[in-house]
Image (tube, rainbow, N blue to C red; front, side, top):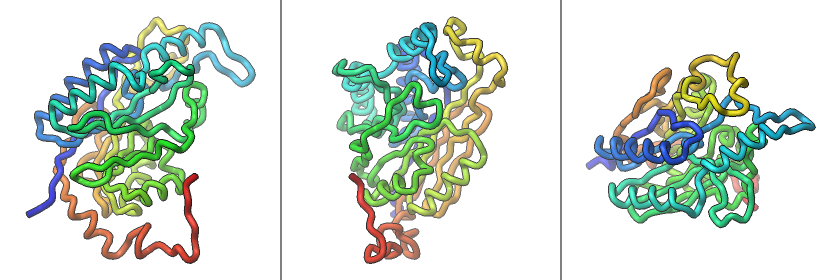
Length: 303
């Protein structure tokens, strides 16, 4: 009898800069995926409240503006407090549906101890909230809005289907971060991303083949018309294309082959049933932390 798991990958847009409406959309999308029989449901990077592609927040090297601070405050106010009400709601939903849920959020400190935001991925399951991963290194101008993680959230969580964990977007270009995940035994390697390029698909396929794991990638589909026009720096978008993010969500098996997707140029839910036995079978000739590792030559550690 095959060891199967049905996975749903959400490719859609939030209600940008609106926490409440995006939460409502998240709940019904999760229910829709569960009705399709999915036991693992994956959302994109910073789905709540949005990935603010194209916006400068009024920042140039050596200078910030008051209007930019106001856009940042709006983003902050609509971000997800951990711990907080939104986390409790998603935990309750996962319990109700009996599913595992992975969702990208912009996270603020639920204890109110600081004003720093993080690009985070939250994990939920039938038992509730399971943990989080914070992005180790925001890419380029993302550093204006997100802080760095201290490395303590290189998280994998146990599920009946294997160990689930994630690296976010360009963290996957960090070879040692990937090795950290392999060393933790990740089987369901989740990649919330904002990278819509064809070349990123090569990265995803390489990781699946290198890690001998299922790679599950979720990106947003976003149009410029979805942005609120009352942002202080809305004019940043003037010269940008109408389709701000075209997607590229997919599910890839441990041999680097597509099981579903990639999905481009529209919103949708990718659903596929995967054979988890492929994880062990694929390690017959390659295991990056087992028989194809040379610990007598190389030393790897995570602080």
